[in-house]
Length: 107
Ligand SMILES: [Zn+2]
Image (tube, rainbow, N blue to C red; front, side, top):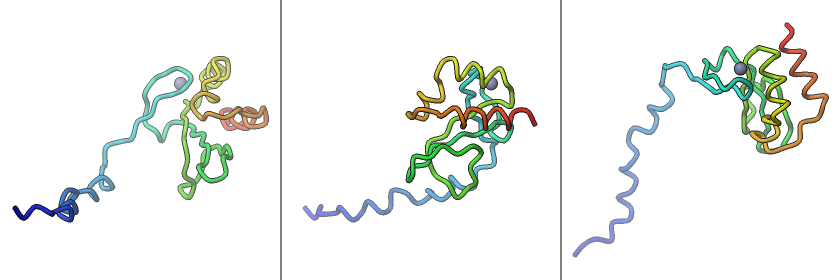
């Protein structure tokens, strides 16, 4: 009966690092139309974990909860109408942020 072996647990995750090498395109669901598309073709809206700020198209140095939208005004309108941004980010979205998103869509 030599089973004090709690420290055997470290052998459970030998291949954990392989997650970072995934080459499949990351896909995300648009909060407007609900379609699933490659993340690089979408506009990303993030609420940061640390400051609770809303950032549009954050750089990789930001971490937080993200929503994705197609580059499409209809998707933005739909998301606003259904309050999807508020729901997915769990925060009220100021009109200035909405305007900023709209401005990105009109490039
Ligand atoms: Zn969409």
